[in-house]
Length: 358
Image 1 (tube, rainbow, N blue to C red):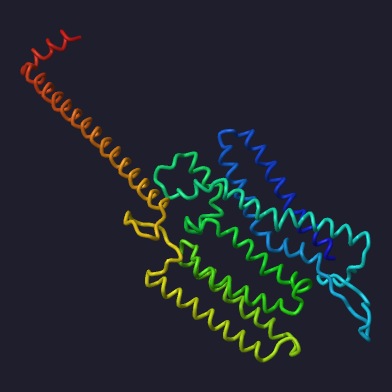
Image 2 (cartoon, one colour):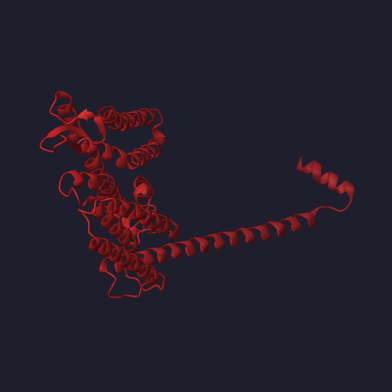
C-alpha cells in the first residue's frame, strides 16, 4: 500500500548514502593519497542520487496528506474518507494514520526542504570560487573544490550557477504542490494554476537563458512546452459549472500571448540585442557592466599578461641555454679536429702513441 511505498522510497536513499559514506571513509583510510579523489566521487554520487529521487520521493511524501471524501447517496454526510493515492487506506484517525503522518512530516523536512537547503549551502560555500571559475590563475586546491560543485554548475553560465536549485523548486511545484493545493486552498482552480505555472516557467527559461550550450536550452524549452497541453487538458476536463466559455477564451488568449512573447525573445536574442544574459567578453566599459564584472575582467587580463611574460622569460632562458650548448658543441668539434691533426699518419707511429697512452 501507499504507506509501504512511503517507507521504501524514503529509507532506501538514506541507506544508500550511509553505505557510500562508509565506503568513502574506509577507502580514504586505506589509500590516503587518493583521499581527495574518493571524496570527490562520493560527493558527486550523493548529489546525483538526490537529484534523481527528489521529485518522486517528494510527491510520495505529500500524497500522504491528501485525502478524498466520499459522501452518502443523499449527500448529507461523509460516508468515507480515504487516501487519494490508495483508496484502501482510510484517513480516519487511527494509530497507523498518526504514525504515517508523523513519519511523513519528518521526511518532509529531510527531502523537499533538506535537499534544497543542501544545494543552497554548497553553492553559498563556494560562491566566490564559482564566480571566478573561468579565471586562468586557479591553483590546484581551488580546481579540486570546483569539482565538488561541478554537478550543479557545469551546464549553466557562470552568473546563472544557482539555476539547478531553481529547477528543484520547479519540479516540486509542478509535480506535487499543485495537487496539494487542489485539496486545500484552491479545490477548483488547480488545473488552471498548473497551466499558468507551466507557461510562466517556460517564459522564465527563455528570459533567464541559463544554459551554456544551445542544445541544452532547446531540450529544456521543448520539455516545458510539452507540459502546457497536458495542463490545458486538465482544465478542459472541469465541468461546465466550474468554467465558462469566457474562461476558455481568456486561457486561449493568455496561451497565445505567452507563445508570442517567447518567440519574440528568442528572435531578439538571436539578433544579439537581448540583455537577459551573457558574460562580459572585453574591456569596454558600459552601463550594463557592474564594477565587480569590470574589475574581474581587468584582473583576468592582467593575470593572463603576467603568465605570458613568464612564458616569454622562460623561453628566453631556454634559448640562452640552447645557445650555450651550441657554442660548447662547436668548441668540442674544433678540439676533436685539433686532436685528429696531431695523430701521426704512419702506422708505426700511431702504435707507439697508443702504447704510450696505455
